Length: 432
Image (tube, rainbow, N blue to C red):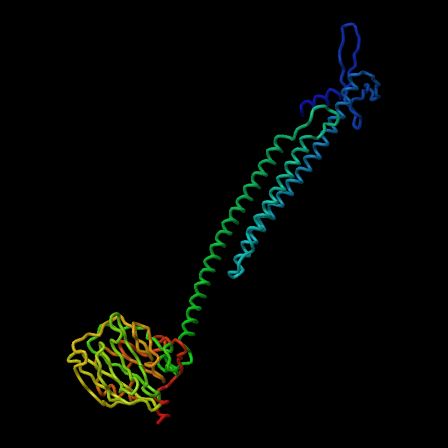
């Protein structure tokens, strides 16, 4: 196209003059003076020569149209350059915003960043808008009128390729930013889920601890300083020891009792196993003396505790000859033998406080219920020495049972029975 324009300008720059002489015809080309309009003929003296040739008129019109077309394309190129600068500016702002966002995430001392999904949506909308503007620009430039020439002037290939490359580079960078933001969003979600799981685990542990503390009754100074109260003679007030007994060939059971019930204090405790509800029972029923039952065999004990004061009671037994001992307030008041000799205490039963069992763990009889208070129920799988029993009775020693210790978490109460704080030695001194 450039060669065509130059050729036309050169062709129109001179004036074709045909001269007749004796030898033949020739053409003379004259230079165009500065400021003269192309297409106007001039003579050798610079005077304008008028010509009404149709060819010259057509060439003059074509040159004018081509100049207008060149000026329009120049304006288009300038406009496209402005658009490219605008795209570069938007891309720079996107990169700056991404860098600023990364720097913000570093300086927030672990604070959660803003939602990456919103940024991804904004970048996607920006990219679509830029692509649309470029496509409209390309279509508009390709359809620019040639100023009267019938053929359309397409966008120059170099500019088209440049725009395509810039658009591709912009799209690649935006897609990379979107991928980075998606990855960051996924990491943020994983961190949030892990943080939520740790928080829920800590809350559950705290709730379990609070529940344990509520069950253990924080009013007690220590786990063993409490008593069980059974104020009525019914068949539904009782306590239950959570632990069971192993197989034993001897035992010692000690407790503090306080009762003024009449006739008889009832059943302070009973131990029943499958097949034998009266494996071990301590009972005072009606006007009978206190009795110890082992495997449903009976021994009467010389004890008296129904005066409404605290008394320390200990009973020992061994399978060898069925020998037993009965202590009250540290003193041995009676012994005997032939109580279920050579019988091992069976394991896996149920210990009930305040009721006698007709079946394992139930079928209580209200007439045999214990009425009063009891504390420090401890059990050992051996026979304690008299000095140990005296130390427990006069509060000079503390020795919890190695089979059944008296602790708050080990005792349940039912039917209106209650647990209350008690420092037994101080309370006993007050009674005295």
